[in-house]
Image 1: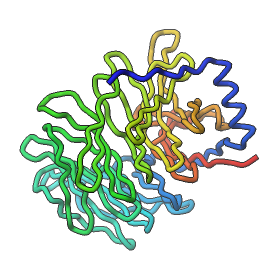
Image 2: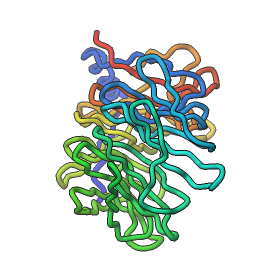
Image 3: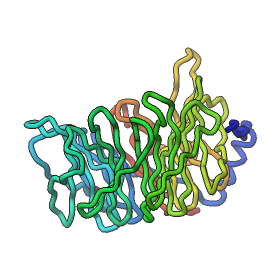
Image 4: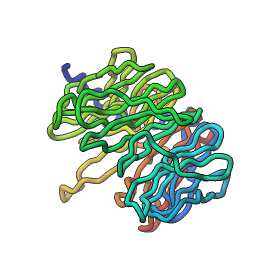
Length: 338
């Protein structure tokens, strides 16, 4: 598959887009979610899944974080929360060295017995009705599976490594898989038991990074020297384009109006990579920071914790991880009307 043409944004065009968004009221107010916290997902009700200091999984409701209790372990985090406030988390059990799935429901938590009896069962996401996607190391093969109410469905990918990334309310799953052991990755869409390999979209590798209710997939494409982002919809691929001086983009989340958030980078005067954030909305890619009046000392990225935006819900609310005066902070960006 040939690489689709990149719709490059000239500086003037980018400024016009920013001005248009501002006139339309699409600006954002930053809400500080706390020092030491990491945010991973925001659901349609505004609940946030994350962790404190990468050791305490937590759910944020309103203005407060609520800890999810777990056993004797470390490396714990909550990766997602469904429409009912139920969450999926994971942690490393100190006694067994196994990476354990943890379910949180109605204010209490309990270990979840996964379908694979291996040392690693790693949760990746949760649908609005509580279906979990995860991957497991099973005899040197990385397998993807969807799990709900004690029933697991293995996603039958052809290679030896499967990395799921998103699930929607219809339980469609996207991610990346190789087709032969050690081979390159293709984006995939798993729908009602049928696996569709979407290809590499002109790159060397590709991954589905998120999926919305319509089944539209946010795609990350790897080339020998860069990355670019797109949306796959009904057999068509739309390249999201690039920002001025940008050398690579990668998406992390897509909502039901095809808004996409992610990161991009450029080089500074010394040739070092400088990471930035983007929002794709209304067919245009925009520097997300330009839409936020950042308080003094704030940046929207933090290289120490996989920073930048992590999730966008259907109301356009974004959560991510940045820095305030050099300290890691989670944040929420709330659309404001003018």
